[in-house]
Amino acid sequence: MHRWRVRCESTLPTVIRPGNSLLTSLALAFLIGPIQSRANSSPTSSTDTSGSAPTIDVVIVGPGDAFYTVFGHTALIVRDSQTQPLSEAKVYNFGVTKLGDPAFLYRFIMGESVYWGNRRSYAYQLEKWTRNDRTTRRYRLQVSPETARAIKSDLNRMVAKDNREFIYDLFRVNCVTKVRDLIDDHIGGIMKTRWSHSVDTETFRKRSESAYSNHPLFYFAFQWVLGRKMDSKPNGYLKSGDPIAFEVRLKELKDKSGKPVVGAAVYDHRRTGPQPIGNQVRWYPISLSLISLLALCLAALRRRLPAHFCGALMITSGFLFGLFAAALMYLQVCSQWLEMRQNLLLLMVWPTDLIICKTGWRILRGKNKPSRFIIGYLKLHLGVSMGLMGLGFIVNDLSGPILPRLTLTAIWAMVLVLSLIHLQDSKTPTRDIPQNP
Image (cartoon, rainbow, N blue to C red; front, side, top):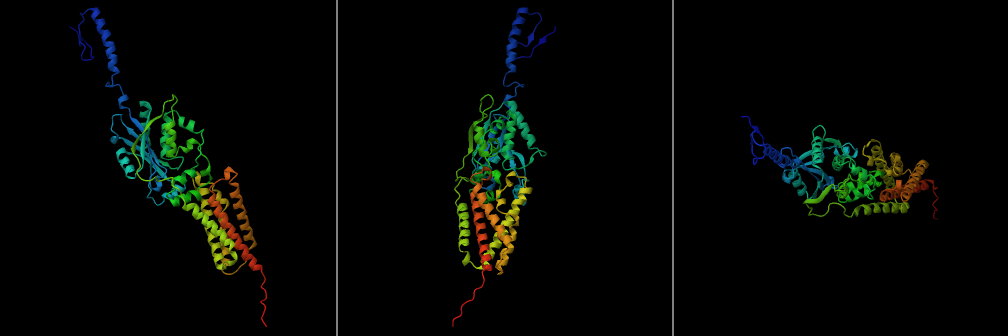
């Protein structure tokens, strides 16, 4: 006799004979429906994918002692499921480059340095950050399983060999912006929409002063070489390219339904040593103030200075200023890094300042007659320098670090005074020396 087989839970009958009553069949059908529905919704069902959804954590790494770690770092941690141990997680990192490349610094300054993303064990990377005593904390990204899967898929694409490289920009395209933009693309663009309408009170120049407080060479370069965009107050979205600023905004960010985008911070390591950034810098203002004071003192003692010493000072000043101006001009024209352009110090030093070396050489050889062209040139320089220094206090677009301007103005005043005194000496007629009877 023919039999109907119904595959269901093991507690149910597996055989129904056609001869059974209609009432029994209806009762059995009534029981099978709800139980079959519960079976389909069971966590162990093969159609359920929520248990295998990946988890995404945003990891914020604090500053370190090395110069390339002073701004901090941001990456993404991915686990295949909520039950996967953290030691088996993968970290997606977009701050990888060849620091040992001899041309790295030049390419960095020119805005042409190549960075790339990679994927590695989080346990390995955390051990490295811990060894360097860098605070490491992570925030769980609270998104749907579908969004988490999409982010993971995009991450794998971004670290693929053909897609992983990008041209680095310290503030616009870096480890943070890669993470920020990826997340923002999957949560409706709320970061860019909301943060672009706010203005951050801290300029990038101030941020660099804090970051490089323990690195004199970089501190000096960020004061003298980078242009006026460093002194503009950025909007919140641009400033979020900085790991610390990004973390502050991310913790307060809520999605369109009012739910926080990330959970509470979980620390994997806390720094035990002294803070590597934000220390008070004394050497810089003291050294520049002393240079300015020395220049003014030399100008005041102009008649007591030997001619060869004055000539050497003018040669040195003209050579250094001309070389510095040529470098700034080169960066203005050739660098792709926006902050390297529009340096207002180009109004105070010019590539043509090298002509002062010729005047210094003449004075050094005893030919005490600077040309009137040189005198007019130096007067123009001093006037422009003083004007820029004064306007910087009242015009926002002309604001910037005051100490470099003060130092250059003092040196130009010294060079002008030394030139004038030798011009006057060359015009003074030789007086007859009275003879004793």
